Amino acid sequence: MKNTFFILVFLFCIGCQNRSHNKPLSRLDSLSFLIGKDSLNSSLLHLRSKIYLENNNLALAKNDIENAYQIFKNDVDILLTRGSICYALNQTRISKKSWERCLKIDPNHISCRENLTELLCAVRDPKCKPMIDTLSILNNGIISTSLIAYLKELKEYKISIELLNNLLVHYPEGKEVLSLLSIIHSDTSVNNNFFDEQLAEQYFKKIIQLYPNYPQVYYNFGKHKQNLSQYNEALKQYNLAVQLNSSDKQSYYNMGFCAMQLKNYNPSINYFTKAINIDNSFLLAYHARAYLYELTNNEHKAKSDWKNCLMLNPSYIPALKGLAKH
Image 1 (cartoon, rainbow, N blue to C red):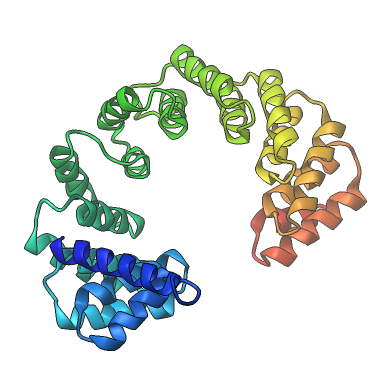
Image 2 (tube, rainbow, N blue to C red; image 1 turned 30 degrees about the vertical axis):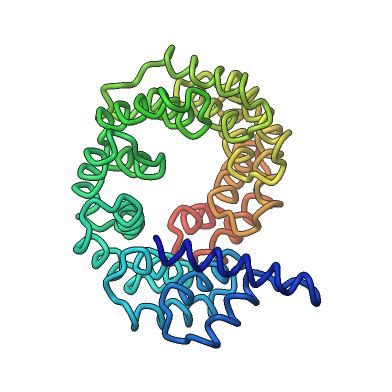
């Protein structure tokens, strides 16, 4: 830390001196000047790599951080930055080794532990869950919503809710926190003992009140209503979602499903068509529309959509069966 402080003071002084003569040097130019004088200064190389990373100059950032790492392999801050740069370059093996080395040197380094945990969860490593547990203990029960979302995927509903409630104390209007709580309490999975229709609705309405232009909440609310077979209510929410995001094919697909359940076949066909117009490789939408064309005795269009399904997946059994009927 002392070295970094003196470097920053020196950079400031260089800038002041140049300001009195020519145009002021940028921080990057000043660092490059100093590195030219002392190419083995790992602190300078580390600082410049961070600036390159901020500016998305990843190749230059990688070059500097590797040079800094070769000079000083046990600096936890260098290891933290090295991992971040390599992660941005999709070099996750190096990221993993960097953050593991960082934790070997300092097991309580929260940033390295957070980053390594995020990486392990992203690649579905079995070590992810124990890492989350340790991180939660070290960080007084505060972890990121992305990690809590992973716990939810593992059906760890109880601990997920506890961690979200911890976050809610600090971020009572946190959009991601409230969204995860609404999703967990609206999850009708058999293993979820925390399904609570009324509580889920309270969270959905609170998010809408705080973030009325957030399309995902209307989609999630619509899915909640759809799962409860409240199809008219679901359609209302999906309509609000597509008003804010007209390119959301899944909302249109779900609208088609809800309208079909209500036996509103022509509107249902239109919704599936909108989904296909957004993504002409949306196999399930072709399947659903083909099924509706058959229900409405439009065999020619049904046959065409079954063929579209086979163009996307030549072994798609429902399409093969559908065509066999014509």
